[in-house]
Image (tube, rainbow, N blue to C red):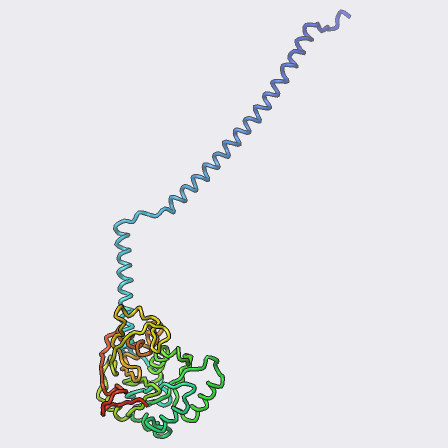
Amino acid sequence: MEGLPTTTKTERRSRSKNLHTSKPSLVMAFFSCVAWLYVAGRLWQDAENRKLLANLLKRNIEQKPKILTIEDKLMVLGCKDLERRIVEVEMDLTLAKSQGYLKHQLPQSESSSQRKLLAVIGVYTGFGSYLKRNTFRGSWMPRGGALKKLEERGVVIRFVIGRSANRGDSLDRHIDEENSKTKDFFILEGHEEAQEELPKKIKFFFSTAVQNWDAEFYIKVDDNIDVDLEGLIGLLEHRRRQDSAYIGCMKSGEVLSEEGKLWYEPEWWKFGDEKSYFRHASGSLIILSKNLAHYINTNSASLKTYAHDDISVGSWMMGVQAIYIDDNRLCCSSIRQDKVCSVA
């Protein structure tokens, strides 16, 4: 028994004390590791945030407007100057087209000859004017073979009418049937025939006529006017090859602002405090030279119409260098003996 090692009481107490002191150290070490991982995670997250913010800042800086240098400003001014010159050239081109300086092929109708016509005369008519048309055909307006011979002399005459609001109805069919017999209609397919559409009708007439016939003059005549055809032809022969001619019985007059009156003008306020129309040819008979008719055709989409067709044409002529020719022989209601038109 004496040779076996013995453990004293003091040694056992020391060992037990070391075991108790190692447990808190382990716990502290564990918490230290957790704290280190947390701090490392936060630092990594902050680094990512800083990187993201740096990218956003860089992008914003790139998107900021650059300060224009003198060279940049001169370039902008140069572009504006070039744009202005392009607009001016386009305006000159439109004017050249309207005056017939640009070469283009006009489609010829079956009735027009290869040589240039003297005049195309459009006589306004409506769906309920059958008796008036027959009266004209029996008086100043030739019919049948005589109408063909007149065209050989260089004068085309047609009744001008649009289409019914209900396309293809009995009104349209009656006109088509009448035209198939008389061959003396000029039907405006794109125009709706109605009293309130008369100012637009004159724009359609001049635009479409100049596309179908190559003539010196284009003439609009009301359906209550008798014409001395030979006198009118003589007047036109005297004016042949005169560009920019706006011919008619020139007049002016009061602008009526009271709604319900016969010649009421809805846009009366545009004509100034004096309420007076500008100088214009009477609507009974209006004559335009070829280049002015071309001008209406070229700019028809932007030309404004007023309540009356003669006022509308007069406003268009104010915008170009038209030559106003006031011929008293075209004052149809006058008492002159040598006038070429009269109220029927």
